[in-house]
Length: 424
Ligand SMILES: Cc1ncc(COP(=O)(O)O)c(C=O)c1O
Image (cartoon, rainbow, N blue to C red; front, side):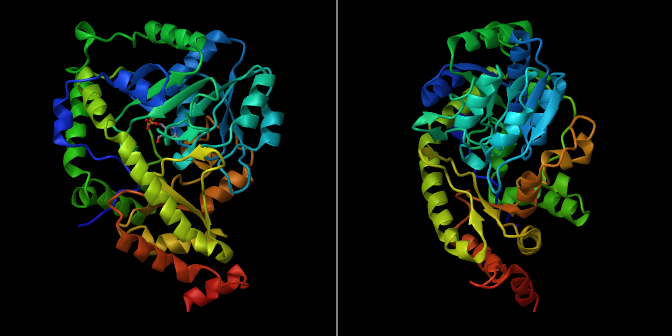
């Protein structure tokens, strides 16, 4: 009856439900030092609006380039916007797009490149932005997993042209489902505003408060559930039981939560739910500082196994991550699978981020090309994540380490030998 969450979401407190203060848009604008263009029903909805805006600005461009390893929702948003999806591989053992492949994929049809800051870690954008600019394409930074992460002290989402964020459950700050958009340039913000108007999404204020629509009341119910059940006992019912059931049935994609419906709802968010987020936002800076300290300390502990073939993804120079979870890369798929066999159903917050490379999901086959993306595929097969939630106590983390450690090769040993040792 104890299940730790797979990511470090910030718990709500009851007083968040009785908030009367700053609006969420204003709070987020202050937090990120940039005006927020809109709070919408999800990060995916925000991506749809971003793509619709770019389509209007560049109707002749009809392709988007997405990373070989990212959330299936990114592909679904691009498909909903009617764009042709091109898949670009990552650099080996990295969340960065492969610049050589990106260069070869960019052309005058490219509307946007969508690099992703995964696991709270900013990816490298310098080359991506340069290459996209040279081709007249835009960069939409996928910041869904990294609200609060910075590059040279500035929020992610501002090096490219548009940044989209997620406030969906499991993210640091959550209103159960939600997302928002930022844009560095005033001109782009004006273009986004026009799209929102044309989709009837920008109306706010008393006469347009959506708080009492059916969808909003449903979301509010879920948010109350989140307040009550986002703890180890509650999570065993709403998360752990299903995880175990799906894994037992061999449905890895469903177990991870990678299966989504085709239709992306693009809606505004009611004031009531936004106010709950605005109240919780006040705790976010401290929450992220604590996450960061814990994440760095645990990454440091894990990095002792580097020589034994275990890699931990770390922030790149001049960047700060938000550490929702730690991303571990094993030397080979077999060792990663063995670690998951030992840990996945133990309620310790260990799981996979995505089930496969983006064009490995059979249910997306009709919208994605099947070009090989070997680095992304290898990343997907060798990666597991350890939750960095405050609920993962030191003794839990030690249990995870003691399950993983015997699987690793000893120094100077080949991985195959370590497999033999661990099986005996
Ligand atoms: C990398 C990435 N992009 C986009 C999204 C979509 O965000 P949302 O769930 O708010 O629609 C997610 C969601 O988890 C994500 O992980």
